[in-house]
Image 1 (tube, rainbow, N blue to C red):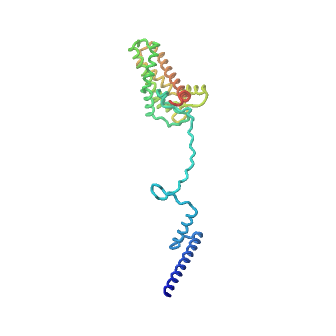
Image 2: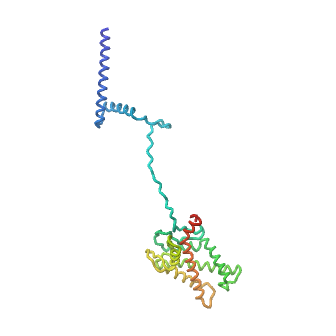
Image 3: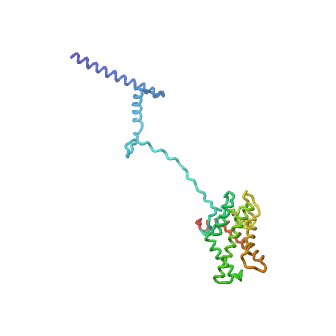
Length: 287
């Protein structure tokens, strides 16, 4: 019995000694943690236990994903992004076609800066204007006007007469397009495109559109007399004498064709200048 009592007393003393040692190690671990020291070995284990107990008492437990069963991180705060407001100013913005039909490739939107047009690009511009499907409709209307006015009595009337008017008007326009948009600009280093003003009063913008018949831009960005329009249209009218019937005074018809071509270009300049406004006011930007 005495041996048993001595054994129980030894076990009790051992347990008390172990408990006191663990308490002391926990206190040392707290001091090292507060002083910023990095514990190692057994101290690290004690520090981990203390930290976990501290977190469990002061924080909510981490959320667990319902799909994976693993703890999930809290949602990251969503950054506040202020949406940019698109500009509603569409003044002077030119479409590729007017009413979705008439080609408008020569028109440049207001405040838009384009590189110089090379000869290949100018030839393609003239080709688009000449062989666009809408041009055949436009030529049909001009041919009907010429036949109704009996501008060439030798062409006659009826289907045969209308056919003669049609192909003459078409060739007139084709030569004028290539002369004013490609050939003459290549020689004079001029830009054959129409640069839209976009803003201002009606009289000011109309005057600007008409003045572009006589003033144009150079490839270097300067301004010069519009030889491409005036000389190009005159040359096209003169070439027409080669396929029109001989006249007692051929210069009269030449001047008429010349004036007609320049006048039509002036009308189209005014239409190009105001089309963005018409489109917004009437069609709400549809075209």
